[in-house]
Length: 118
Ligand SMILES: Nc1ncnc2c1ncn2[C@@H]1O[C@H](COP(=O)(O)OP(=O)(O)OP(=O)(O)O)[C@@H](O)[C@H]1O
Ligand SMILES: [Mg+2]
Image (tube, rainbow, N blue to C red):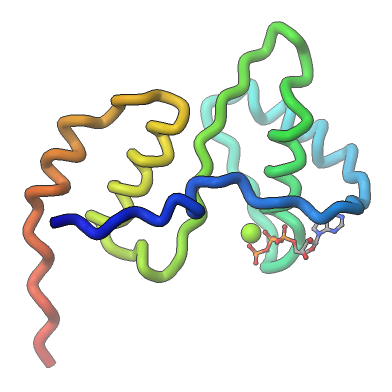
C-alpha cells in the first residue's frame, strides 16, 4: 500500500507578515509568467519561496490573465522517482482534479528500486 501523502507539502508557504517590497522582482515574475517556463534561482535564504508565495497571493497582473498554481515543497525524501512523481501529480491535482490517473496507477504498481549493495 502506498504511503500516505503529506498534504502540507502541497500548501503554498506562508509569507512573513511584514514584507520588504521587491517590486522589480515582482515585475520580472509577471513578465516571466508569459513564457512556458520560469526558473527562480538564487542562493539559499535569498527569499525565493517568499517571492513566489507573495506573487501568487497578489493575483494576476491583468484581469485577463489566468493564474492557477500547484505548489509542492520537496525534501530529501522525495529524491526517489516514485515519491517525486506521486507528489507532482498530487500537486497538479489541486488545480486539475483527476489528472495523471494512468501515471498514478503505474507508480502504485512500481517495484521499489533494488537496494544498493556495498
Ligand atoms: N521580502 C521579504 N521581506 C521580509 N522577509 C523576507 C522577504 N523575503 C524573504 N524573507 C525572509 O527571509 C527568509 C528566507 O526567505 P525564503 O525562505 O523565502 O528564502 P529561500 O530563498 O526560499 O530559502 P531556501 O533556499 O532555504 O529555500 C525567511 O525568514 C523569510 O521570511
Ligand atoms: Mg525556499
